[in-house]
Image (cartoon, rainbow, N blue to C red; front, side):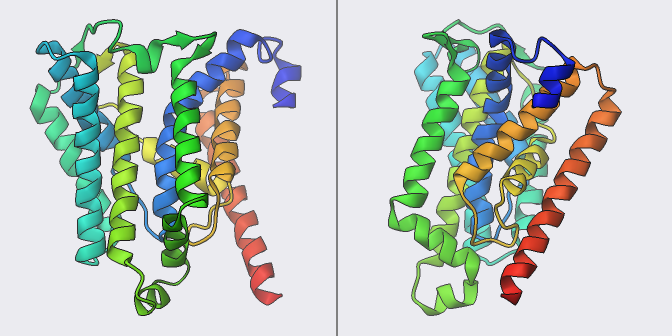
Length: 294
């Protein structure tokens, strides 16, 4: 961040820092749900597709004359339902989460394109666009939503018994089953939360672009996974914090913004991101091995 600031005077301007907050908020909201899922020992590859489909549900509702709050509710229900389906297949049928969510990724994306014939839905009322384009007291509404989602998720993980269930499930699944822990319910709720937060991110993206697109959110799952791992959450589950994820989100946002201001080639941007993620994974693996030896 300091390097970017020294190389590009526009980096530390108020407008650009607000832009960093706005840009990081969408991936940030998704990353919160991804953190919870990864803490259970799972993964959710469907978040980008769930984002797209739920935003199209909301967009079509509001274009049909539904009030914006009702349209938002439709999106949230759609996202939560798709997440619950992921949890149902993962927890109750004990199918690999990679396979289940990969299937949901294709299913939700396919339904998105079929639903609109591949065309975007555009032109929304100003209230409907509030989650992505609004400003309150000088702060972007997306950043406010991200902050509220972070606090809510933090309370769930750190102040409620469910947070302990999530970590116990990810730390040792066999022991969790043996102890009588409601593993099915814990895992199902984790995926439901991930789907719900993906739909929130979809409303934010749709509001920002004034467009709901069937191709929206492609690759967002990898950005979220990168932020979670960069924040120190164990990819095998059981260990990690939302505070670490928040740091990972901000690091990725600052890195991307700095490279954009420096006019770095987009292909080189991907290379730099890959190096950062690989370095974080390597460092995390080394720290874990050191802890196990001690």
